[in-house]
Length: 155
Image 1 (cartoon, rainbow, N blue to C red):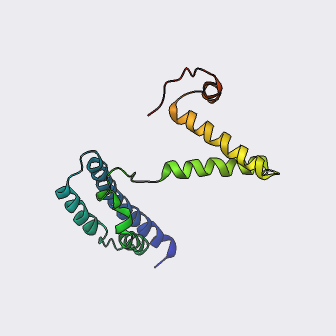
Image 2: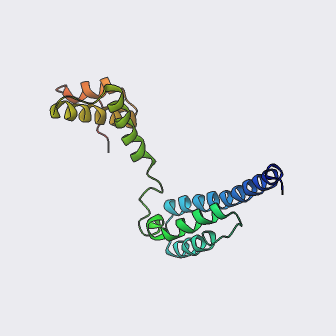
Image 3: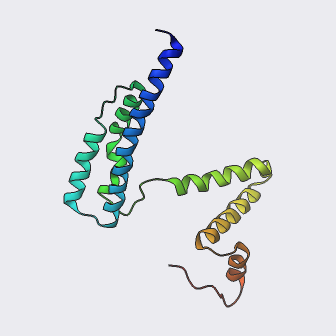
């Protein structure tokens, strides 16, 4: 068969298979989020069984089936939330924090001394903490060095 014609047939087919699987995946992810809000041992068993069912899916799209199979092999780590509902379902916050540091390092072309590296780390931590608390970095630093802090204690 003509490769161009074959591509016009297969690409939409694969796209359809991927979208169908992703719809099921995001439905499952939403149920995991609901579980985190209201943990229940019976629901945990159901979610574990649903994971096995979802990640045993065969779509006919070899690359997608390979990814699905590899994900199933990581079940214990991925479903830790069923044992410890307080842990996040993803590590985006940690990755974003690390990415900020790497970006800063790339832009400033490293530090010259170990003290400079420590100072950079401290200020990056302060800035990230202030951002997370929704206050100005300057106000946060000023509040911490004043004799009578004005910002209320955070949790």
